[in-house]
Length: 568
Ligand code: ARG
Image (cartoon, rainbow, N blue to C red; front, side):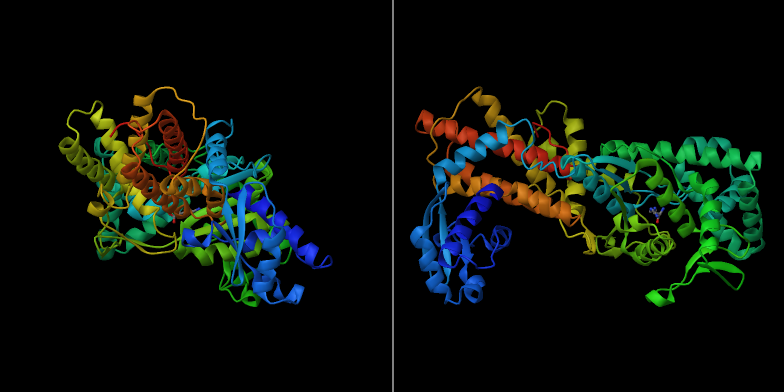
């Protein structure tokens, strides 16, 4: 629809200039006014003419009438005035044919604008804290982050995915102390992360009774900072064990990172940052700690060094940003974290600005809301956590049970159950605007009859089944009925939907589009027999539409990291 809108806008612009040659109206502006009326009786595209009333000094109905008189545009069959609106009716046959050709006959995926060609984006996402549970609170950063990566790739950007692991800080002192006191090699080797988390939790319990443990932990972390070989080896081991486990979850989501450069990677890159801050007179001492005062910008100070000289989370982020700019020369660096970190990002973005790094403008923080499970808030402290891997395991199990019932004959049922179970979780998560707080109900996510991942996957599988049965076909003439045209219209909206999703860093725009496309397809399928259509021409036309839906659905599902098996 993007290209048709553009043509229609050019024709409108011409019409306006013929009414008043000097009218200050542009094609770009007109494109933004062209809207899709909610019901077809009002045309396929409507132009509200009151937008030009001032410039033309004419009442809107008169403008609409005047524009309709001389309107001429390839692809538009009719232009009719209706009150203050100019309603445009699309040449449906030509339109459907063009959609089919654009979607299936081009070497570029439909909707891939190439806007990012030659540009680089760094995406910092997932980034769990080693030794703390990887729980469903991390689902957001992981799937939103990866979806944004896919979206940028689709737009032609070169993308670099970075897992900024929380692998540095006092928690490692605690973990080392706990391991030495209560842990064992075998237990860690056998139970992996779960054992590390258990040790970490035990540390906190014991430290309640015996606060001196905190001093020991601090000392252990200082030893780590000074490169103590034994503690360093333990630390490395804890991280390797953790990464190995994260990778299992990432594999289920088809996520691969280009770098696992966690916070510790920037240890040797921070002194230069501190130096520069000093040189630029940005550091002030506050009760022994070094801070950048941000009062003038309505924010609390950004903490750079603790009283004991150790660095902090913001310090590492500043060093990491500078390193990434120098290394990758990014056009954009995107950070996906919970909305709880908004202030943190605003603060250190400001510090970079004050340091005179003009590219601070290319840093984008993408926040998201909280998640609860079956109405219960999750909290790490009280132990009320649900691990991501457990949630996935449960989803897969439930999906397998549903499929054993629905399609017991299906070959490779286990793999499909994994795709459906995980797809359901991801789809559900990415259905709502990212800032909305989400209440996760697994049964809802897995409802095959609801607006869910399984429903979308099922629709996709249906298109595959039809196309496989049909074999080769070549549509010639298109004579779309109402359902077919509605479907084409929705298909034609994919490119602009994608642009909107990308511009707003909002995968849910794509998720909602998928649901609309599935609904339109299923309505079409219900009313328009494909393989048993009355004529060969009709059959080919319907196969063409099915093939178009198949392509667009596959691409769209991929953009939101949901697998699309051919059979369910
Ligand atoms: N590890 C942090 C957490 O779990 C998220 C890190 C986000 N990335 C960053 N560059 N600060 O809260």
